[in-house]
Amino acid sequence: MIRHHLSDSLLTGYSTGSLPEAFSLLVATHVSLCDECRARLEAQDAVGGAVLDSCDGAAMSDSSFAATLALLGGASPEREAREPVEGVFPAPLRDYVGGDADAVRWRPVGGGVRQAILPTAKGASARLLYIPAGTAVPDHGHTGTELTLVLSGAFEDATDHFGPGDVEIADEDLEHTPVAALGEPCICLAVTDAPLRFNGLIPRLLQPFLKI
Amino acid sequence: MTKSFGSFDPLAASLRIRSMLQELAIPGTLPLPIAALMGRAERHEDKGRHDVTADDDNAKAVTWMLAVARDADQQAFASLFARFAPRVKAFLIKSGATPSLAEDCAQDVMATVWRKAGQFDPTRASVATWIFTIARNRRIDILRRDRRPEPQDLPWGPEPEPDQLDAMVLQQDTERLSAALAALPDNQRALIERAYFGDLSHGEIARLTGLPLGTIKSRIRLALEKLRQTMT
Image 1 (cartoon, chains in turn cyan, red):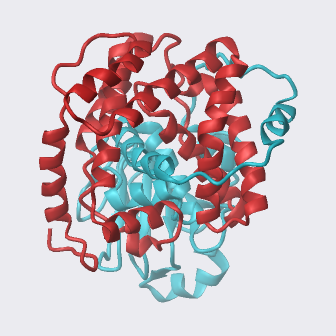
Image 2: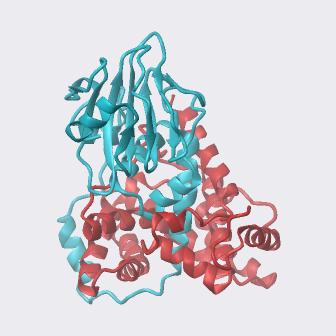
C-alpha cells in the first residue's frame, strides 16, 4: 500500500515536459507502481490535450500524408501481446539499468552502502542506493530537492516510514538520517538537482570521488 | 490557497470554473454507442449550447482511432491526420521548433499514432490528450535531446472493446475541461498554454494550481481499477 505519493507540481512538471530527465525517471517509475498517481498524471495530460486541441493548426505540406504513409511502409498497427513483467524494477528503470535489480553494477560507498549512478542529462542526477537492513545513510542535508523512491525493503527517518513505492520529497529544510528498516536491505532510487552535502568531514572530503 | 501567480488567483479560478461546470453539466448520460454520440448535435442545439461541434469532433476522433486500431483503416487515419497533424505542427512551432522541423516531427508523431493505435484507451483519454503525450515526448527528444522515461504500459489494457458508456462519459468530462480552460481569462489561459508549450520553468509551473481535474482523475482511476479487475 503506497502512502507517500508524488506532488501535484511534480506531476504537472512531468506532464508539461519541464522536469530534468532524472526527475522524469523517478516520476515514470513511481507512476508505473501507483494507479492513483497514474490517474492524476493522465488528468494533467488532459489539460495538454485541451491545449493541443485549441491550437490553430499550421498547414501541413501537400505531400505530408503520403510521406507519413511512406514512413509506415505498409505496416499494420502493432499488436503486441503484453505480458505482465516479473521483477523488482518497473520498465522505465530497467531501461536505464539495462536489466532488473540483479543487473545493477553497484559500487561500495562505505558502511555497507552501495550505489550505482544512472546516466541522465545534466541538471539533475539519479542513482540507485542499496542500504543493508538496519544501516543508516550518513546524515545529510540538501542544497536542492531530493526525491527518494523505495523499490524494495523500507527506510525510516525522523519524519516517517517509507515502504515499496513510497516517495520521500526532501527539500533544503530537511536534515535527516534515513535508516533502512530491519529484515531486508532497502533498494531505492534517489534523484537530486543539487549535490548532497554530508555533515561529517570524511564524507565531505569523499564527495567529489563519490559523485554524489 | 495563499499562493498566487501574478494576477492568477487559483481559488477564484476554481470557483469560477466550478460554477461554469455546473452550467455546462449534461444531465443523464445514456448508454449509447460511441458512434451515436455523433448524432447528438441537434439535441444540443435545441438547448442553445455552443460546445456542440467540439463534442461531435471528439466522438468522431474516437471512432477513427478505434477503426485504425482494429481494422488498420486508412480512411480513418486520413481523417485523424487532417484533424491533428496541423495542430501537432502548430504545437511544436509554439514550443520552439522551426516550421520544417515541426512538419517532419508532426509526420513522425502521426506515424506513431498509427503504430501505437492499440494502446489508445477512450475510457482514459481523449484522442487529443493521447496525441498530445506523443507530441510532447517527441518534443523532448528533438528539442532537448533528452531521453524521456515513460511509465510502464499497463500489461492488461486497454480492452479490445472499451466500455462505450465509460468512454462517452470520459469524453464528455474532457469536453467540459476544454470549455473551462477556454473560458478562463486570457492571461490565465496563456500561462497554462505556455506551460504545455514547454515555455515555463519548473519553478513557475509549481505555482500553477487550481486546475479543475478532480472529476477526470476520479474517472480515470475507476477505469484503471476496472481494467485490473477484468484482467486479473
